[in-house]
Length: 146
Image (tube, rainbow, N blue to C red; front, top):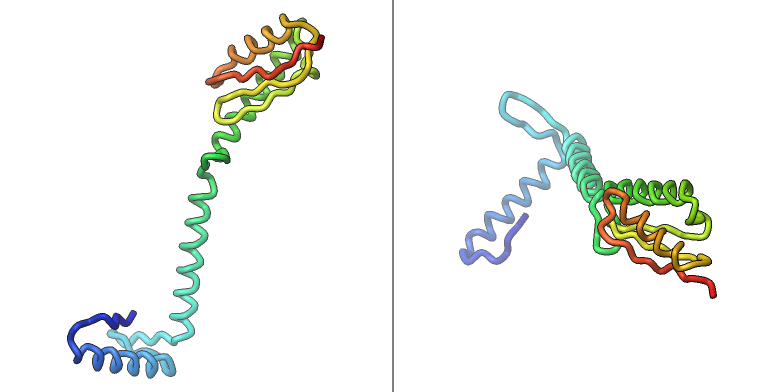
């Protein structure tokens, strides 16, 4: 890269010479030590592949990271397991009807919603959810039918 902010005027002459040399070497194979000749096409292809590899590795590493509003892949798997365990607990419980309560989880916080017939069902659903490993907090938005 040419840096035009250099203080010494002779550096611009050096930059021009360097550019002329760079342009001249693009037209013919480079003569490197040990008599290794690499064509400009091979250099271009190599740098293109290197750039592509760096971009893909960056995407691969950041693709699993969570943000403030989106779970990481690991968190998604954990929350899916928590939700499944809670639904299983509801299905096996005689008091809570699993189809009446919706369960969602995000980063260990579980939200319960839906409509139940009694306050006892609402409280039982919350207790079952809190008993599941990995649950940090339960937000009980279940409404009791009047």
